[in-house]
Length: 80
Image 1 (cartoon, rainbow, N blue to C red):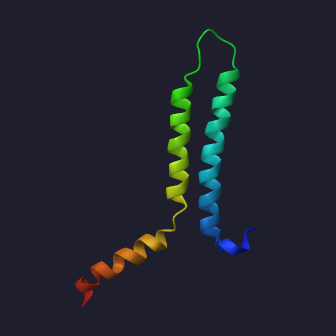
Image 2: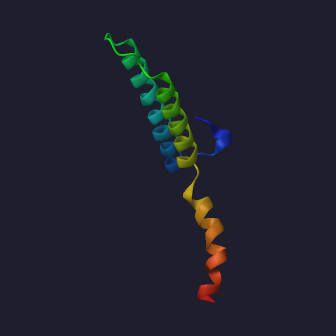
Image 3: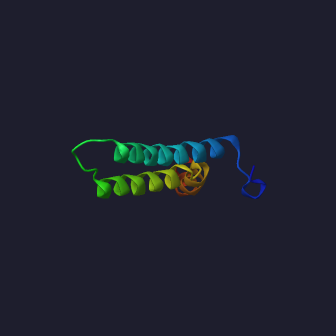
């Protein structure tokens, strides 16, 4: 796959799920835009949704170990 990124199964799943959320949103927008009907599609809302999902994919792909690894030393004094 991508050996330089050293992705374990959890990180790989996070990337796949985040990317699929963005892909499905884009596909939904394209299908709605092609639908025949009197209503115009709101492209501004579509691109806002895409941006939200891209940020979500970025945030979801951050390993929780990094977050916990930073937080634990600050709380270590409780256990000393």
